[in-house]
Image (cartoon, rainbow, N blue to C red; front, side, top):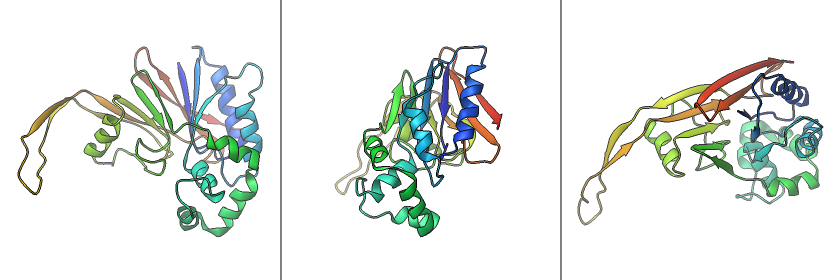
Length: 232
Protein backbone atom coordinates (compact mmCIF):
# COMPACT_ATOMS: atom_id res chain seq x y z
CA UNK A 1 0.00 0.00 0.00
CA UNK A 2 1.16 3.53 -0.82
CA UNK A 3 0.16 6.74 0.94
CA UNK A 4 0.29 9.76 -1.37
CA UNK A 5 0.20 13.31 -0.02
CA UNK A 6 0.38 16.80 -1.48
CA UNK A 7 -0.38 20.41 -0.55
CA UNK A 8 0.66 20.35 3.12
CA UNK A 9 1.77 24.00 2.81
CA UNK A 10 3.48 24.11 6.17
CA UNK A 11 0.40 22.86 8.06
CA UNK A 12 2.16 20.77 10.70
CA UNK A 13 -0.96 19.62 12.65
CA UNK A 14 -2.56 18.39 9.42
CA UNK A 15 0.56 16.44 8.46
CA UNK A 16 0.80 14.87 11.91
CA UNK A 17 -2.87 13.86 11.74
CA UNK A 18 -2.28 12.10 8.43
CA UNK A 19 0.75 10.26 9.82
CA UNK A 20 -1.36 9.04 12.73
CA UNK A 21 -4.09 7.89 10.34
CA UNK A 22 -1.52 5.99 8.26
CA UNK A 23 -0.25 4.18 11.35
CA UNK A 24 -3.79 3.09 12.22
CA UNK A 25 -4.43 1.41 8.85
CA UNK A 26 -5.23 -2.30 9.04
CA UNK A 27 -3.15 -2.79 5.88
CA UNK A 28 0.49 -1.81 6.20
CA UNK A 29 1.53 1.29 4.26
CA UNK A 30 4.96 0.55 2.81
CA UNK A 31 5.68 3.72 0.83
CA UNK A 32 4.95 7.36 1.60
CA UNK A 33 5.08 9.93 -1.20
CA UNK A 34 4.82 13.70 -0.82
CA UNK A 35 4.05 15.30 -4.16
CA UNK A 36 5.22 18.85 -3.51
CA UNK A 37 3.75 21.98 -1.95
CA UNK A 38 4.80 20.91 1.53
CA UNK A 39 6.14 24.41 2.27
CA UNK A 40 4.17 27.65 2.04
CA UNK A 41 3.76 31.01 3.71
CA UNK A 42 3.00 29.21 6.97
CA UNK A 43 5.67 29.98 9.64
CA UNK A 44 5.65 26.27 10.56
CA UNK A 45 7.14 25.37 7.16
CA UNK A 46 10.62 24.94 8.61
CA UNK A 47 9.38 22.64 11.39
CA UNK A 48 7.46 20.63 8.81
CA UNK A 49 10.56 20.18 6.66
CA UNK A 50 12.41 19.01 9.76
CA UNK A 51 9.82 16.27 10.35
CA UNK A 52 9.90 15.22 6.69
CA UNK A 53 13.68 15.01 6.59
CA UNK A 54 14.04 13.34 10.00
CA UNK A 55 10.86 11.32 10.72
CA UNK A 56 10.25 10.16 14.25
CA UNK A 57 10.28 6.52 15.26
CA UNK A 58 7.61 4.32 13.60
CA UNK A 59 6.98 6.89 10.84
CA UNK A 60 7.93 6.17 7.25
CA UNK A 61 10.74 8.04 5.54
CA UNK A 62 8.89 9.85 2.73
CA UNK A 63 9.93 10.17 -0.89
CA UNK A 64 9.52 13.85 -1.74
CA UNK A 65 9.32 15.70 -5.03
CA UNK A 66 9.23 19.39 -5.80
CA UNK A 67 5.95 21.31 -6.09
CA UNK A 68 4.85 24.80 -7.06
CA UNK A 69 5.69 26.43 -3.74
CA UNK A 70 9.13 24.80 -3.66
CA UNK A 71 9.79 25.99 -7.21
CA UNK A 72 8.75 29.54 -6.29
CA UNK A 73 11.04 29.44 -3.27
CA UNK A 74 13.98 28.45 -5.46
CA UNK A 75 13.15 31.24 -7.90
CA UNK A 76 13.18 33.71 -5.00
CA UNK A 77 16.73 32.62 -4.28
CA UNK A 78 17.73 32.80 -7.97
CA UNK A 79 17.96 29.01 -8.17
CA UNK A 80 14.88 28.27 -10.27
CA UNK A 81 14.13 27.91 -13.93
CA UNK A 82 13.25 31.61 -14.29
CA UNK A 83 14.87 34.72 -12.92
CA UNK A 84 11.94 36.61 -11.38
CA UNK A 85 9.11 35.41 -9.07
CA UNK A 86 6.46 37.01 -11.26
CA UNK A 87 4.07 34.02 -11.08
CA UNK A 88 4.22 34.02 -7.28
CA UNK A 89 3.64 37.78 -7.04
CA UNK A 90 0.79 37.69 -9.55
CA UNK A 91 -1.00 34.87 -7.74
CA UNK A 92 -0.39 35.75 -4.08
CA UNK A 93 0.97 39.29 -3.89
CA UNK A 94 4.17 40.82 -2.60
CA UNK A 95 3.32 40.23 1.09
CA UNK A 96 3.07 36.45 0.61
CA UNK A 97 6.30 36.53 -1.37
CA UNK A 98 8.04 38.12 1.62
CA UNK A 99 6.44 35.62 4.00
CA UNK A 100 7.71 32.71 1.91
CA UNK A 101 11.21 34.16 2.00
CA UNK A 102 11.04 34.43 5.80
CA UNK A 103 9.49 30.96 6.31
CA UNK A 104 12.27 28.91 4.70
CA UNK A 105 15.91 28.80 5.79
CA UNK A 106 18.88 28.81 3.45
CA UNK A 107 19.71 25.25 4.53
CA UNK A 108 16.25 24.11 3.47
CA UNK A 109 16.58 25.97 0.16
CA UNK A 110 19.72 23.98 -0.61
CA UNK A 111 17.88 20.77 0.23
CA UNK A 112 15.02 21.75 -2.07
CA UNK A 113 17.45 22.05 -4.98
CA UNK A 114 18.13 18.32 -4.86
CA UNK A 115 14.52 17.12 -4.83
CA UNK A 116 13.19 15.02 -7.69
CA UNK A 117 10.78 16.41 -10.27
CA UNK A 118 8.60 13.32 -9.82
CA UNK A 119 8.68 9.55 -9.48
CA UNK A 120 7.98 6.68 -11.85
CA UNK A 121 7.06 3.57 -9.89
CA UNK A 122 5.74 0.42 -11.57
CA UNK A 123 3.08 1.74 -14.00
CA UNK A 124 2.62 5.06 -12.20
CA UNK A 125 3.88 8.62 -12.47
CA UNK A 126 3.70 10.47 -9.16
CA UNK A 127 4.20 14.21 -9.63
CA UNK A 128 2.97 17.58 -8.42
CA UNK A 129 1.79 19.16 -11.67
CA UNK A 130 2.47 17.14 -14.79
CA UNK A 131 5.33 15.70 -16.80
CA UNK A 132 5.62 19.14 -18.43
CA UNK A 133 5.66 21.54 -15.47
CA UNK A 134 5.02 21.83 -11.72
CA UNK A 135 2.65 24.69 -12.56
CA UNK A 136 0.37 22.71 -14.87
CA UNK A 137 -2.93 21.82 -13.20
CA UNK A 138 -4.51 18.61 -14.48
CA UNK A 139 -8.18 17.98 -13.65
CA UNK A 140 -11.08 15.98 -15.15
CA UNK A 141 -11.83 19.13 -17.17
CA UNK A 142 -8.42 18.95 -18.88
CA UNK A 143 -8.79 17.88 -22.55
CA UNK A 144 -8.26 14.11 -22.91
CA UNK A 145 -5.55 14.55 -25.55
CA UNK A 146 -3.56 16.68 -23.09
CA UNK A 147 -3.83 14.08 -20.31
CA UNK A 148 -2.85 11.38 -22.78
CA UNK A 149 0.18 13.38 -23.88
CA UNK A 150 1.38 13.85 -20.29
CA UNK A 151 1.11 10.10 -19.69
CA UNK A 152 2.69 9.09 -22.99
CA UNK A 153 5.75 11.24 -22.29
CA UNK A 154 6.83 8.85 -19.54
CA UNK A 155 5.16 5.65 -20.78
CA UNK A 156 2.84 4.97 -17.83
CA UNK A 157 -0.89 4.34 -17.49
CA UNK A 158 -1.54 5.98 -14.09
CA UNK A 159 -0.75 9.60 -13.22
CA UNK A 160 -1.05 10.81 -9.63
CA UNK A 161 -0.93 14.60 -9.25
CA UNK A 162 -1.46 17.15 -6.49
CA UNK A 163 -1.45 20.56 -8.16
CA UNK A 164 -5.26 20.93 -8.28
CA UNK A 165 -5.61 20.20 -4.56
CA UNK A 166 -8.66 18.03 -5.25
CA UNK A 167 -9.47 14.32 -5.23
CA UNK A 168 -10.70 12.66 -8.40
CA UNK A 169 -10.28 9.42 -10.32
CA UNK A 170 -10.61 10.08 -14.05
CA UNK A 171 -10.33 7.32 -16.64
CA UNK A 172 -9.44 7.32 -20.31
CA UNK A 173 -10.78 4.20 -21.99
CA UNK A 174 -8.72 2.17 -24.44
CA UNK A 175 -9.05 3.26 -28.05
CA UNK A 176 -7.25 3.63 -31.36
CA UNK A 177 -5.79 7.07 -31.98
CA UNK A 178 -5.03 8.18 -35.52
CA UNK A 179 -2.64 11.09 -36.03
CA UNK A 180 -1.44 12.92 -39.12
CA UNK A 181 1.37 15.47 -39.47
CA UNK A 182 1.18 18.10 -42.21
CA UNK A 183 4.40 19.91 -43.13
CA UNK A 184 4.96 22.81 -45.51
CA UNK A 185 5.95 20.29 -48.17
CA UNK A 186 3.29 17.63 -47.89
CA UNK A 187 0.94 15.64 -45.69
CA UNK A 188 2.66 12.73 -43.93
CA UNK A 189 1.07 9.25 -43.83
CA UNK A 190 -1.36 8.69 -40.94
CA UNK A 191 -0.30 6.63 -37.94
CA UNK A 192 -2.64 4.64 -35.72
CA UNK A 193 -1.73 4.10 -32.07
CA UNK A 194 -3.56 1.70 -29.76
CA UNK A 195 -4.08 3.31 -26.34
CA UNK A 196 -4.60 1.23 -23.20
CA UNK A 197 -6.87 2.27 -20.33
CA UNK A 198 -5.31 5.18 -18.45
CA UNK A 199 -6.10 7.06 -15.23
CA UNK A 200 -5.57 10.52 -13.84
CA UNK A 201 -5.82 10.63 -10.03
CA UNK A 202 -5.94 13.80 -7.98
CA UNK A 203 -4.53 13.03 -4.54
CA UNK A 204 -6.10 15.93 -2.61
CA UNK A 205 -4.56 18.47 -0.26
CA UNK A 206 -3.41 17.82 3.29
CA UNK A 207 -3.14 21.40 4.52
CA UNK A 208 -5.25 23.55 2.22
CA UNK A 209 -8.57 23.29 4.08
CA UNK A 210 -8.87 24.08 7.77
CA UNK A 211 -9.52 21.09 10.05
CA UNK A 212 -9.67 18.63 7.15
CA UNK A 213 -6.64 16.83 5.71
CA UNK A 214 -7.20 14.82 2.53
CA UNK A 215 -4.78 12.25 1.11
CA UNK A 216 -4.79 9.11 -1.05
CA UNK A 217 -4.08 5.44 -0.47
CA UNK A 218 -3.16 3.29 -3.45
CA UNK A 219 -2.76 -0.48 -3.66
CA UNK A 220 -0.50 -1.30 -6.64
CA UNK A 221 -1.36 -4.99 -6.47
CA UNK A 222 -5.01 -4.43 -7.45
CA UNK A 223 -4.90 -0.81 -8.71
CA UNK A 224 -7.44 0.33 -6.08
CA UNK A 225 -7.54 3.95 -4.88
CA UNK A 226 -8.99 5.16 -1.57
CA UNK A 227 -9.38 8.84 -0.67
CA UNK A 228 -8.97 9.54 3.05
CA UNK A 229 -10.32 12.58 4.91
CA UNK A 230 -8.79 13.14 8.35
CA UNK A 231 -10.10 15.72 10.84
CA UNK A 232 -7.53 17.49 13.00
